[in-house]
Length: 227
Length: 114
Length: 222
Image (cartoon, rainbow over all chains, first blue to last red; front, side, top):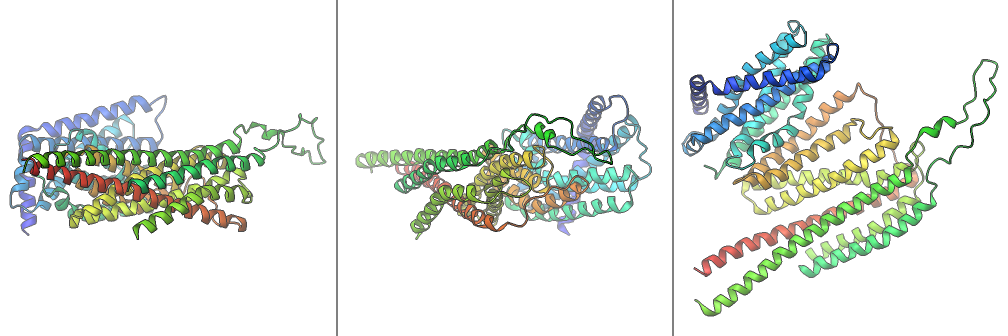
């Protein structure tokens, strides 16, 4: 239970810091907006692009924004040297991992709400039909992405090319999330039978379980010796 | 270690040097692809149902012959392996040189100091 | 004992590199694809050792992360490099074969796509080791473990995604005259892999000795 208490404490800290600064949320949401606009310019030729393309737009935007958000979140910790303080404290290290995961999920949920609304507006797509399932797909996708990126973000430490390294290391691993997310979203938006998107939801759940477990297991050894 | 590396490398180079020409000679025996089609025949006669017999002249569109592709494929593998092996040998040589250099420095210093 | 092992690998590899092409050129032509199918004899073993390398890297990474084993770390980096090397072989010979067999250089075939992603993971591994700053080796080890766990997930997701696209066939059953060249090639490439692995491990061991020597010299000359 100490783990849970510490995690909640750390999450609370992150939320309070962010509420005061508001830098992270604004920057990430704005970034997502610009990215969607660029996609609209690129893909909207004469008529509305196919649903596959729009699903891709949504998921790529979420992935890019997630990377930016996680990078920035850990950068902020490094600037204040608070990451080192947390690592040196008696708090279980896994709590740091979990708290970053929860924090990034909260941030990404905000971004995803804005992104989905924008996609619906700009690409003239009615999202109300499969909304709960879409939300579930996005949530599970974010958790999986966060599980991988939080581990790498914390251990990239003071590496010089860490901004480039984080996406480089993360993206190949999260390809199954992108496949599941986009195909599930397409199935929802095309009105395919529920079984298809349900399958991808279950797939994402399995992915998340495996990678969360691996992340828990590996966080301490990977960041050991690092302060 | 160095002599073993040299032996391994030379046997590989020998194998490549022997294998390359032999394989190429063997490959040259195989016809390079479908034989060039003859000059287009006059329009084939239609049978009772109006079908025309296919004569293969439409296959002329396929442009890349198979044999050079196969040689390129194998060549890439051999080249990649050889380049990597040489790279490793070179790096190892550098490390061993540095080790020898360090050793001689210690011996020289150890003669004077301590 | 080690020298016997190395010598035999070298002999097998050397003989195989000469012998396999001979056997391959003597093998019967495959009915549907003709001459281009001969790429398969080196393409499939390259894919096999690529996955072997990935597996060894994951194993070494576990030993390094959880037991601090330096040998494990050496095995991890050596096998990661070989995974990338043979991945290059697979990803070049695959599309060459595909161009003639299926008409396009890239057809999103499940196996090729999974190989591409696995290759990217291990390229990322090498980047992580090189540029990851302090603690890079542990970071890379974590990546290798994630990567190994990801392989089945990548395969399943790509495979389901691809079922609506045209099915691509790979030669599943070997004709009679093809078994000998195939297994000869398999043996050759595997021996080659093990040989290169040993060469690369020797480099890592030499580097470790050099580091120790530097430290010893600093103490000595103080």
